[in-house]
Image (cartoon, rainbow, N blue to C red; front, side):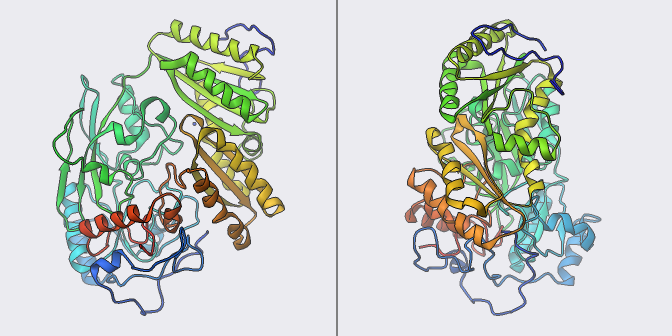
Length: 534
């Protein structure tokens, strides 16, 4: 049993005994030519060009960087202002800037010359007010764990890091409402809450690095969405600094507030293009008293779907996660991370988590469910964990797939939302479509949310492979009325494909909102919205 010596496998028969027991933009350089379009503030946001659905980017590839817009460049006078405002927290050392200039996947790299690390909302106000007056572009940055190039500069934008804005402001133990600064690391918040018998409503593989402000800015989904819903429901309030330095205080700590427009929703998922989130108020559930994790094997995706249907019906209120990964993912985990498969080799694997208040009740429900899926041969093998260390080990088989993929060369990552029954069809179709062009085509994700993470690897960046993948993958998602970005956002890489998921009218309204809140377009330029809005 490798790392699970105390686990008892689920036998392959009708009864069993309950066992006790987480486009490489090659160093995009500063634009060497000063040939910049002279445009008005509204045109800066909306280049009025008509283009075909999903295309129309100015670069050769829609995911590449567009030409640099006519923002000012940082001067010594600017640096002096920042040093005075943020003593010791205005970073210009190129060696210290390296990690903030490149994304986690090392596929997008900017050339910012200054990193600002404010500690307070007032400091963020002064930074943005100054940058807006000077027409200096700003790239807000949290934990820099994004996968679509949304958290790093494209050219020489000033990096505004929230890493020092990491204080818990208030926690109400009666309502379960947490109010904190945007730079709090998700895992640190989880530890803080667990000591008070609560948990965060979201959990991500990047929890050790990602910031809650970044989570909200990208509307991160994660592993608990099936149980607790999205951040659009659990975030109760935000404090946001607008491009001109004004503070929008929507930091409510109320479950119900029906007075006018719910403005915080504009900033959830806006990827720092409308304002910089400086504080968050979020509703946190009680810490479950009993947690169980089952790791199961299925012979086909159809059986996996039937297992999911059975799971929802029999586990009901205690079901908190239903994740899957395919055999190709498991092979990469074994090969690169030396993780051990705790069950018999299978085409598909499922991670099911239950969380409730009564261990005996939950174990009985899980036992009955497992007996049902084993008896009906929906599941071929499995193991169950109730101890924290073993639960963590099982979850690592799902959470560390992204890490394993980084060892395979260059990875093309797609975060697609589809009708649940179509999720794996895309993986199979892509394998047939690409043939030998790709090294690996793997699928994993959140079955309960209809969210597939499609990953395609090659030894190195391959323009021909990318051309075969895009826009085929987006056309496929659009055909089945899916979304080209379920939870990662659009960032730089996907901005020009937005029309596969949103109508022209919708995108035009987004552009109008951006132009109203950020007339000069200084906040996270080149991200989220397409280069050409029609």
